[in-house]
Image 1 (cartoon, helix red, strand yellow):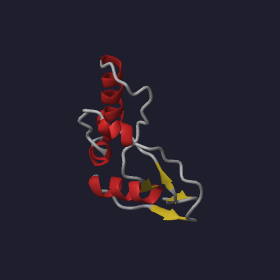
Image 2: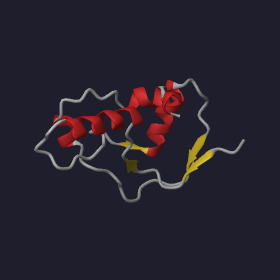
Image 3: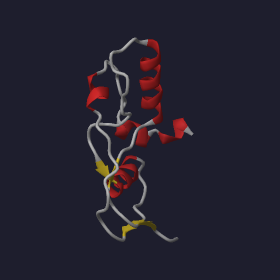
Length: 102
């Protein structure tokens, strides 16, 4: 079995589908002074960190390798979202319960 190869281990944004649904629902059903909200968590993770979290939360064997690190960060600012009264489940929950979203 060939390992997953991470060609540029860098920070990206990740957001769970259940949290996205809650965010969209809130924005549609509540008049808000905020016209735009980045659907991103405040904490940023490298690709390898998300894979490692997924592996640990789901009791899997790690099977990946990092080919190189760095590159452009593709991250947004989650400050506005964090100020809204939405109960987000968070990245760990969404990684652990990924089957519920499929």
